[in-house]
Length: 255
Ligand SMILES: Nc1ncnc2c1ncn2[C@@H]1O[C@H](COP(=O)(O)OP(=O)(O)OP(=O)(O)O)[C@@H](O)[C@H]1O
Ligand SMILES: [Mg+2]
Image (tube, rainbow, N blue to C red; front, side, top):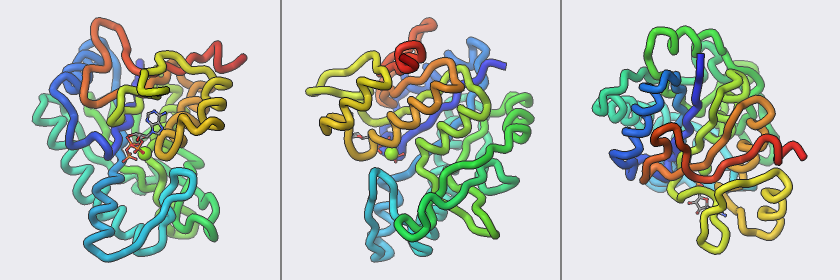
């Protein structure tokens, strides 16, 4: 089974272009099975504002109190997941929404409870649930909310969640869809990145904020996945077997 894990950023959910869905359909037509994982950053921010709850980020990760977790789950599982499934269905793609804490689709452990609160790093993925759904021809749409230890539920950065799913499925491709064309340097798209070059761009501050968990996820996923790209959701990302955006190169990354 040829699989692609597509992570769609909350940053671009409202701006997904028709050509994005054409690329999704092209992948399906070429025999790829797709697992979708979504974020919801801007919508969670809007909900927190409504609830009058402050939130902060540390190294691109949202510090998650009980209240923030409640808001994140409400937005991600309640509204973003529903919207995405309907959007895919409206484009003729048969999709099914999954809450990743159910059946331990994603299981996670606290990263640092004291510093980050209810934020998790994925420790296991229930591959058999995902593979069973893929075999029926449906496209699973996963929330980045995981089952934590002792009955807890943990907020997982959606890049990390998608990376863990791609790693565990040994996916052919991991695609991280965001609101920019890929990794930019001086406003110009970097078409190929290696591990060493990525590190240099982080150190010099070219790569910052939400791009940090994305590139780290990309490099980690390369250990198990064939190809990793960061692409824009406002444009096509796959046409006639060709991929766009920033490509992370396995051979060069391993140097
Ligand atoms: N070198 C860089 N090249 C491109 N974007 C960068 C770079 N450094 C930082 N960024 C920022 O990273 C952002 C993308 O990450 P962000 O976390 O905001 O979105 P997302 O991951 O797509 O959405 P979500 O977090 O909701 O899932 C870009 O919009 C840009 O502001
Ligand atoms: Mg992000």
